[in-house]
Image (cartoon, rainbow, N blue to C red; front, side, top):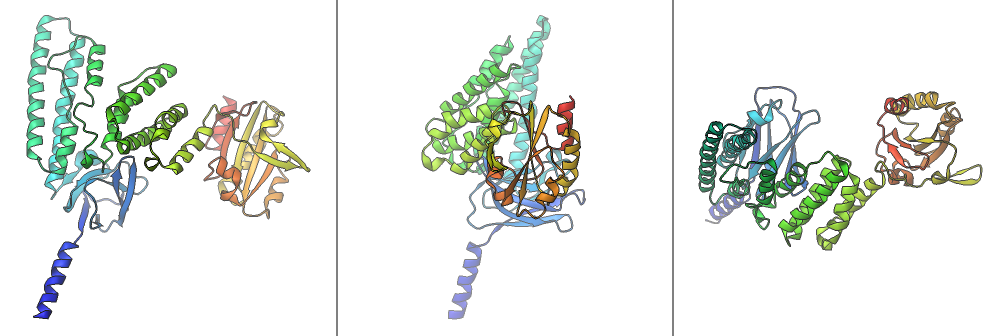
Length: 448
């Protein structure tokens, strides 16, 4: 009796603690994907969950017991473009795809929720595109007969969209997908606009109509951040840089007003926007977001390490003065900011143990030697000075600085150096004017 009871308890325990899995198959077979990494999306962050090697064009990973429902992402080894986002709500997920064309080949074989959500996105995207196309066509029409045809087609298509949206909302009621489907609904005016500005104003006015920033089910995804990026970057466009930045600032303020007092969502959206501006190297806007919004969040919604990282990148932005470097030369203390020996400076971080450096540094020396319009400040990041003097004895016209402790060197930290060689071109005032990746880029900058 006791033995049977123990067996029953073990069976129940195993059932309770069973884990869900994500299984994938490449179709057609190929050797492009060698490893798959699983992340959980939490706002702007990707939280690592697991990874798997490919085995005969298949992979399988367990999703830990107790993992929260939400949006998850499959990423692949370097060289494979794209990723797969899917919904997880305590159920196994099986899928197949062609890594050369993920978006049009992705199929879910067992997850009805993911199948439904994928079908919803595909169907509504087609109808939304047609509605937008009819509106754009209407702007250029001058024939009353064509006006009537376009108006009728728009009304018919709008009815299809409303019906499709409602059907998917009813079909997914009570499921995770329902939250995303409701929030993805777009507002379309019942009649066509006669001017593009009226149309744009309407899109902006109703952009957040169906998004509930208090919906906890949406927080375990990147939905809010993506919608904010779309609003800021694609509905506020100008060819003039100053006007564009003003539009960005105004749009960010509008998004924050829509979010209201939800500091968790504010933090996620602001982080997403900061990363997006970093991709465009728009440091003034990063500074704007940090100073006007992110810094004003309560302490438990801020990541100080993230702030430090972004502020360091702002310091290294093109147009800013290069961070100070000090060194000793013949017993005299020197400063980068006080140099007055050239019109331009090439600041290069290199190392005697870096094979790329040993190829590029001699080329750089040959290119700059004898040119009094540029001066090289070469910081060698080394663990010791064993080979430093031997190499620098040949670089007699440069300012050579030894940076001991290599990656832990203070100068390396200040300039965010994580690989060598790394180049900065400075003007006479020591402002950063370019950040070339290779010697050829340095050469091209001066030759052009």
